[in-house]
Amino acid sequence: MWNILKSNNPLVNKLRPIGLLNMKFSFGGDMPILWQDKLNVGISFVDSQHQYLVSLINTIEAAGNCSLERDLFLTHLSQLEAYTHFHFDQEEKFQLENKYPHYESNKNEHINLIKQLAEIIETIKKETGESVRQKQVGKVFDFLRDWLIDHVIGEDMKMKGAFPDKSF
Ligand SMILES: [Fe+2]
Image (cartoon, rainbow, N blue to C red; front, side, top):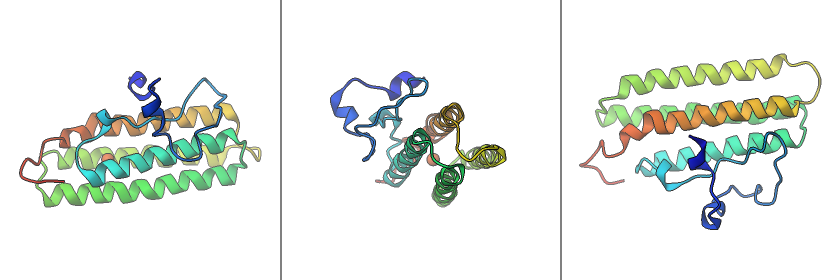
């Protein structure tokens, strides 16, 4: 699945979040998540918020790569958690207002994703030692990447074309 997120196209690489352009990523050969058009669901606020979630997750990877203290690393995760709540609330409100047929399944997935994110934050909190180890950062990043992309491709993509009477 991740092949679609990596590109040798210089135009696509320009989409990397500001601040990450010249960084080297040392663990596991991972790269920041690169946004591609095929991830757009065609609803502007949803696509913008998904892109910002990608940016937050990439920042978490970059932060971990800087061997940040655990508490600072957790600050980034908390920021992601807060924005995720905001994004899911916005999506659910929009879906409810527009009588989206997959509203219930989407809401259930949101509950599950929030729970998974809270669990990974708790795992990091329990870590001993003052800094977050790179191996652990790699695991968190891989998890978050799956977590977000599964959400976008697996569930939110059902919104594409689901509101033919609306222009976004
Ligand atoms: Fe979403």
